Length: 402
Image 1 (cartoon, rainbow, N blue to C red):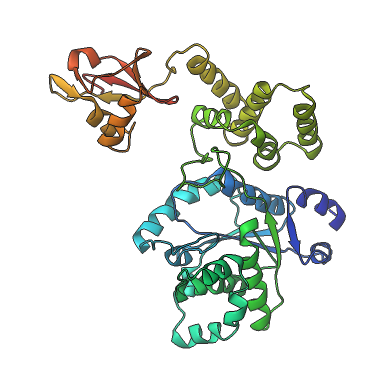
Image 2: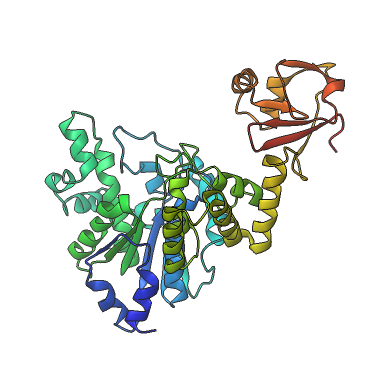
């Protein structure tokens, strides 16, 4: 494709290209570009928020360019200070390795997993080998004044909030990833622009051609307020089961629908514009439009039929008040009287017994569609019963769950 044709594919959904004039120039050089995306495995799931940049990376692959996916197993132990007003709790190497193994499966649902179009690199490969002389050389490339130009650092500095030297190191280490893999372009969320530009600075100061940076908007989470985050539990994961994924999409506030159509589906720009116009003038019903959104998102990761089946399962539970066809089975304890909070915890329907007790007190736990108010129930009453917690969590209790 010509550079202009590639730009027509790559630019939709993008909010920053820096420097703006370099993208067409590099695409016109007639060579395979190295397009970097670094992601720190600090949680086990790949969310739709991560998928925004991952899907843009796939577009570069589809145009024949090389995706260089950096699994930040080293930088995850340092912790990205972006948008933080306090120091981040450090993760252990073991925690990071566990998360890395988990997220790779999610990456495979999005990227073209082909050695000709993809490099997967772990940044411990080069960062773990830096000695003190290397670290001092790295820190000599930038000044403290440059670091304090970063908005969140500046805010913390002026409000006398502590900033550790390790946090100063994070953008330098991320920039060294670009030096190590000779990236032409780095992708990231809009909150990563400063970090990614540090990669360009360091490449130039190590005598290399500086990368350009392309950032994409941050997808707002299902709570409608904050960016999608596993720590805030407002996320949709790409490997959520279809019914769970559809249900989460149906729970988002109406004002987010257009952003989700734009960033979380493959709908062409003109169709997203038509959805926006239809919602604005009332010609499109919000409920039906959200159903379409749910089918589109589920279909992207599980196939068209899965999207239709997920919608039908949603109606079964939320329209007709029935339990879903497929419900996890869980073995009842042998006690004649069963303590329900502990049972809900052990079945994975609550994080703890105390949370389960709160859910019971709030009327969020039902059996056969009726609210449960007692914390202890006879085993014979629970045998064969389907218990519902909240809107989407069900379990069938069996004396013998084999």
